[in-house]
Image 1 (cartoon, rainbow, N blue to C red):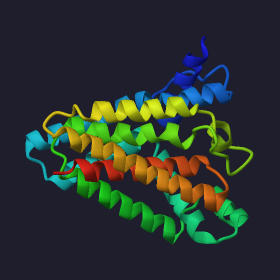
Image 2 (cartoon, rainbow, N blue to C red; image 1 turned 90 degrees about the horizontal axis):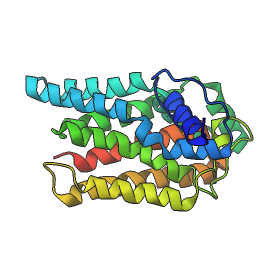
Image 3 (cartoon, one colour; image 1 turned 135 degrees about the vertical axis):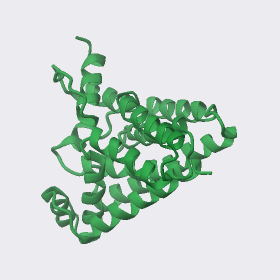
Length: 248
């Protein structure tokens, strides 16, 4: 099997609950390609969210209930991976200015008050914004845009915070030109979202990337690099920003 095949298996197996065979090889090239394929791997999750939004709107369900069901489907389909990363990152950043202590807090996996509060607030923002997104396609697009930012967070020059773990495997593994290409492609496709002016989709991508980049900068300065948790936090923050931009 080609390395692209291994990368596809790594992306799907890591980012979703879709059962796939394990990759034969996981090296930096495979890891980088997996991050590039992250939006494609998340297509089933985005489609599920889009269908739920469409069905909920068609059935006249309360907008907040529909939003919660859509976000719940995405969380279920990803094993809550990114939400867990968001909570752990918030706990780490709020724990101490000591880098080693912050990383130790993140490694424990249990959520403290800072992590829980951050998780609740981000989910509230996502659900509240999603109540204003009446298009299933637009809702799906926000989910995918969040995953597009993973290639930026893993671009060449971004260091790992630890010598082991997912962050060490993917940090700096994506060529910058490829990461830029993903962002440009996302922006271009977002301008074609039906029922919205072209600039609204472009704004969603810009805000998502700006939010993820700000968090990435904070984590690299505070923690010395990225971890799997910080990648998940960036995805959730980017999704919230994209949904806010797409809400009408």
